[in-house]
Amino acid sequence: MFWGQFLFALCIALILTLLFVPTAGWRRGRYREGDAAAAILFFFLILFLASWAGGIWLAPLGPLAWGVPWLSFLLVALVVALILAAVPPYRGGRRRAVPATSPPAAEEAGEAIAAGLGIFFWTLLVTLAIAIFLAYV
Image 1 (cartoon, helix red, strand yellow):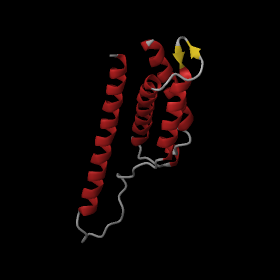
Image 2 (cartoon, helix red, strand yellow):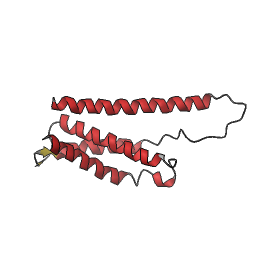
Image 3 (tube, rainbow, N blue to C red):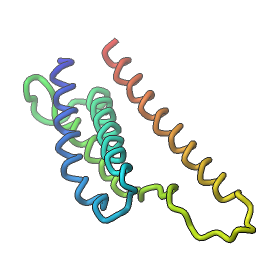
Image 4 (cartoon, helix red, strand yellow):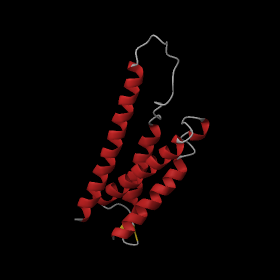
């Protein structure tokens, strides 16, 4: 059961990532050069762990395939993918023309936002991993 659920969550996350990446605008310059790969990886990780945790904890939906109710995994992944696709990318690395006399508060605010988003991302991943772990214990 573990491997079937793992593989269904992995395949669904992979397919939805491949479907959503072209629509995310990473080719049109929304991201800096190295940030597009990181954004795709983060999208996939969140989608994979959320679909796995949601598919395990929700009531089984749909027909069984190899003993796994795959529809619950798909619905959770689809909802999470739509939410993530609706969020615009953080453009913290973009420098605006700031007068030389202005205080460095704008740079500090950008760093604080980036740190907050990083903390939120890792907290989300750890929480999803704990939810998966608790489902099997």
